[in-house]
Image (cartoon, rainbow, N blue to C red; front, side, top):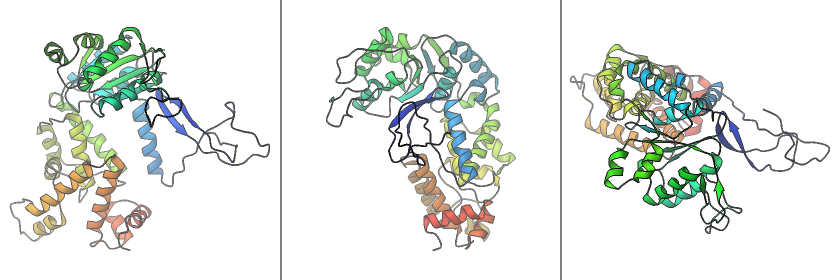
Length: 412
């Protein structure tokens, strides 16, 4: 990272490529200069992120690496099904043609898309993604194709490039392609046919060279036959095809996946990674996992984040999978033999389920994490009424707990 020697002005937003991923940076100047120089394009520029905790720095670096440098070797799985599909995908990645990735929800379609980009001749160019199901048609159109100046009331001065322009020379990943509206299907088809399009509200033809990688959990072939998806677009997208196996067909990989997710959650929640008990692993391997790897990750996150102890057992995982977990009420009842059957009280389960549902409904990951973190500290503080006792109980640093108690106003 370079220090900015300019002072007294604001640098504009800049687009930079990092490991094949395009980032939009807004950089503030640092320091002063005596010669009054301005921020020319040739001037050195950069930015500084200040971290007070090494753990946070590690999380940011890990996040950047996960998003920018995912290769086939980074995809967890040594089962026969995964080795076969990784080998096939790696061969197809080298062919500069559209790829259609099929698979159930949560099987890792975006991971494979990123790995295909990474293994292609376009690896040094941008990789951009659009979830076709995540936004209404008008917003999806402007995100994909951009818009011209004056296209609508709140349009940015000078217009805005869309993902197709930003991904020029690289790869555009279209997730949930089966949800694309007929209107956008027709517009996308033209781009795939001749590489040209117009921005929303614009008249100028823009030419791009973009490789399309699409993914869906729907049967596009059947949809093309019944008229809900354009047949000509289906054939354009499905030049090369990859079908990902569900988790129930790769049970051998569950232990390795669980180890990674447990360590990741422990790092995110700043606690000691718990040990996965034998009955816990057996439960994971027996579960059907209709949501596949994503469901496994979410279940382990809930179980680890709310675990009262250092051993992760089958009961903890079963509770996490159903949206329940150990509550203070249930803990007290079991300690006094009030529930010899081992079943949680309906009130405790309802309260915990509401908490999990509220956390999952948050607009972003950090908001959900903070809600769970605050609830955990609020519940434990009466039994461990000092930052040192609470830090020892959770296996994290005293400074970290003290900062969090202050942040949430607990014990003040």
